[in-house]
Structure formats: C-alpha cells, structure tokens
Length: 214
View: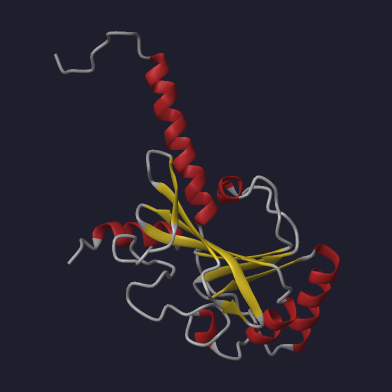
C-alpha cells in the first residue's frame, strides 16, 4: 500500500478554497462529470487514467512520455487516437498532466464541436443554459466550476498551456476540452517559483563555497 501522506498533501493543496457555490447549476447526472455516464470518458478500471489517479498505478500503455519539468514534479503524457468519444465526437488526442505523480489535469483534443452536448449534459437550469450558450457564441469558451473539477471547453488555442507546446508546433485543432482539479494553475505557479528560487540561489553561491556546518 502506497503512503497516504503525498496524496493528502496534494489533495489539500489543490482543494484549497474549494466550495460549491449555491448558484451552480443542478446537474442531470452528477456521475456523468465523475466519469459514471458518458459526458467524460469513464475510468473503467483501477488502472485507467482518471483525475487524482496515481501515475505508478495507471496503465499508460500507448502514451508518449513528453518529459517532466520543475525538478520532475510536473510530468506530461499524451496519446493520439485513444479510441474514446465525448458525446458524438471522437477524441483525437488525450494529454495527462501529473504533479507529484498524481493526475491533476486531462486535456482532450477534438475535431468536432460538442458544446451543445456538454451544456445539455451538465445542467437543466434554463438561465444557466442561456448564459453558457451566450458565452459560447461570443467568446467561444464555456467554463464550469463543477463539484471537485473545473471543466473548460473552448474553440480557440490555449495561450498558457505548456503541454500544447510539447505536442503541437501549431494549434491544429479547433476544439479543446480541459478537466482539472481546482488549484492546478496556482500549484504550477508555485513549482515555478520554487525552481526559480533554487536557480537564483545556486547562481548567487560563490564557486567552491560549502554549506557544511562549522
């Protein structure tokens, strides 16, 4: 049995401030977002890719290792044509983001628009549906803070996605769906800060200086 401490620490970091708003839409099927129905591809076994899944347990057969960053704490894996669908659309590519060996974000690349399917699957609130459709028509993006996940769907190239630069020289897909744990971006920013601080320290330390105790 693996130690629980890393899991508890990561969960606490990524869940900081997490609270479901009273204005969130009522859902048609909560389990659909949690992978039980068909909204997001389901984790059909203990070794399948899923948020909060432990990398050493997940079966990454067929995935390409894109490398790790920030002292190997942020790691990416991707797979083309994984053979799964989101609604009526085939997923062209799936990319998994791991921090400290736990899956904290999953990106789906699609060539077909599934906005209507996602909106219809996530809420029955008429006003919420209108707002989502309005955002989609004007901004080409819709976003949900939904239970323990943040879901973002957009018809534009992401401008702050390191994994995108690793998998595509150009943004060659019209539709992107992201499912991530709350606090992901903040955690990545913290990893960058720590890395930069270490490098600055190493640069400032005079050559040959020892940090051994007196």
